[in-house]
Length: 576
Ligand SMILES: [Zn+2]
Image 1: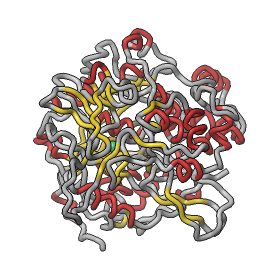
Image 2: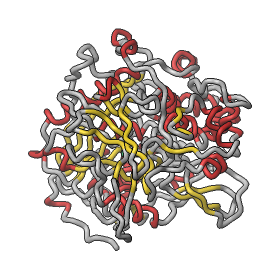
Image 3: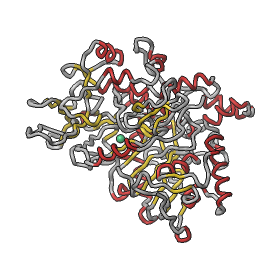
Image 4: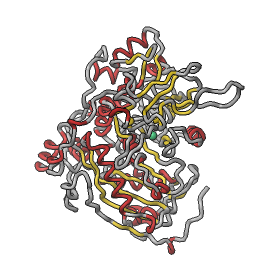
């Protein structure tokens, strides 16, 4: 399985640290903290507090920054190009992508800036074969390019471990890292990204089997496997702006508005099965929403000096929170809008069939009856110049963007803007038209940003005035409410990717049990110690090409199947 090592001597590794200060929407934002003066992250404060090693001044900083959730966030990005020639990396492309990303996320007070660009024209660990693996010794050239490690193998290994240890990777995890340990493409760049966990890593590579991949965080934060957003390098040749913000949505915990694989012309949500598979029997979500599930979700946050129990409860909530944004993406009966999660539960418990608003209809041609329609049920209809969703068959029901179940849920701004996590792309010029989210999706994004794994990221707003003058156009953002339901696919993967939710782990299972992860595309199995271990595979995003009307690309199912068959990753449970 091991690919012969490429000749390191000829691999020209260009490492460029550019800081691009061109932020179209936030021209006032300078580049963050001075080098050598890194501010503490939440994880630094949490670990220091538990170990009793915080100095007085550190404690003052921790109190100021990590006693409550921030109102604004400004994150650093690392752009890592694998198997891409330096000539193919146009700074204008990155600027355009970054400006668009910031335009999309500005209403939610999330902003991004470029911290580092790494171009590795002849990367070792870059393959379209998910199972292809290299030893750590093999991939040292890639790691050296990203992390400035020494030429000597043993020295490089020590330096790598020191970088990881400084970012609170557990000793147990560090002990498992040897020069003979094997890594596939994803594991290789995730190891490097964990050694730069203060920034969001975006990997651009040619062999990715989708236009983008991403996922939400795992509850545990001391793993050696970091996070990453993947983009296919063919995006470098085009002007598509929809992929990166969508993947960033997954990175911060929200999943698709649509669910895949419905054979019928309506999509039964499967209420009892979904509700019944909450990781902690609904107790974690009930702690937040109350017994009747009527309280607001708010913005759950663990102060750095809270008890271990508070952290555990937060991690448990990560296994159940995916249900919160779902209700707005469902309807009952004759396209009746649900008004709350409590209403969903009432109707579901009463035996009413609950349907999905947005779904993908996959049809395998096996009968002579022609279908009225197949593919994504919600699309931008370019001839009618409006957003529409289709339901039923003979006769087909076609609702437009003004329908109560669709307005400010799937479509926004008179139908000219679609949900960020949909595959619907109304026409756009400067900023991606896929940029609407509901209030419950916004809750989920903020909640995920407060996950310990995401709190490894440095928020450059804290302790600075970088974000004070940029109060974004909150006033103009659409009201709404609506999240996306599906734990469906996409999302989730561990700690990062996917949608966030990923993987809950819970205890008390029987060895050998398996269940789907909360993201819907990963799988969890019960280990010998009675803990759930979940795969952390990125769930695939396959974006339709612009103008295709939202019809799904054919590769999606095949790719999902491949991922579904992948073996479980080791060590994936919360340490308490
Ligand atoms: Zn997606």
